[in-house]
Image 1: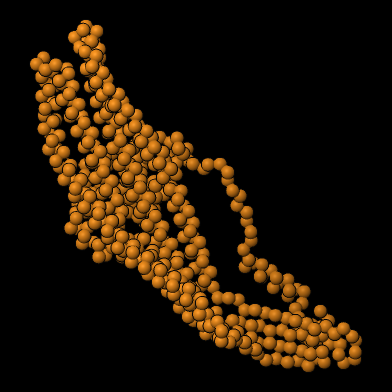
Image 2 (image 1 turned 180 degrees about the vertical axis):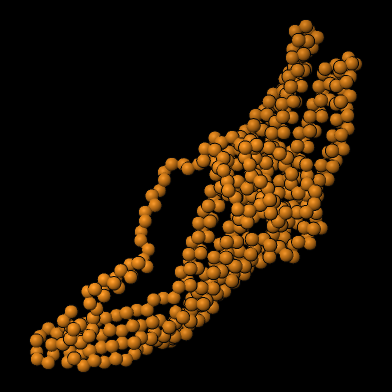
Length: 461
């Protein structure tokens, strides 16, 4: 080969070849293994977070300091969920893939180089020169399709970015929802324990009265059944409380046995129905899931345009140099193209057009569903808040009666059985209020997530 280079000036010397090889290797990416870990990687304690406020999906989270040393309030729980949720890590990985695909789509294809030597099998005089064909080709159709391909990939990356934002909002809503449930169940358990104390005190008194023959077994049995019912309610509440605490640990990416100190009130903004309805026309511009669907539709529109461009002939252009066995050199160019007679990319165009129609209909369906869900939540909240107002009026009366009953018991003008009935009725109403307020707060958290932002106005204490 070196002899051929010296004779005709064709070929690459050893030193120059090494330089070219090293240059090509310098731009290569090398493989690095990343072994799997087969054991859980939960943190055994709350991580010390360094949070970039700009990375958080809600302004409230960005403005609220995170300090788990004094317990976690509702906002701190939501912040920890956004930063440490395992599912969000996977969604962020998906975003990394989409961005890498967009980077790949922006790269132009490399030209093609070919070299084909023809070595003679005989040493016939005049025909002992090695013939060759050498050329450089480039697919010009790739330049035509490049813009549409890159635009589609960029739209897909934007869609993945918005999908991550929507998932973060969902995680924030779920964290707040679990916080509301846990605090409500703790309040419910405390109220039920107070009811158990009243019922147990009454049962001890009645057991003494039965021993003295001043009470029938029927009365004692009925009150014992009431106490057993309260015990069962406490057990059920503790089971649900334990399940929700485990669910919160999983949402926060913590070990199942982690015990969180939840503090503070479950303050959820009270939505103004008129304000919510006024925001509905701008919902497609604010809700990340709707914006993600729009970005996906844009990507598909670019893929359809790419398919339409693909129906035109693909052109490949190249420069060539050749030499025959007699030593005669040639140079020129080559142009090749396909003939759009049978296929003309019609199948791909039909597929992309049908896919775009499907995305168009999905977007419209999601718009309609979002409006319906918000309307349903507003209606439910109206009914629940009306029920709460009626319950508060009745509870205020029962609170006064319970206070007077306690005073009468202390004064000796009312026996323990009658006072127990009054106190039980009062505690039952308190239990109803705790459950109803939990339902209202859960509806408000859901509405806040669906509307796509925080409400102005006072908070529910």
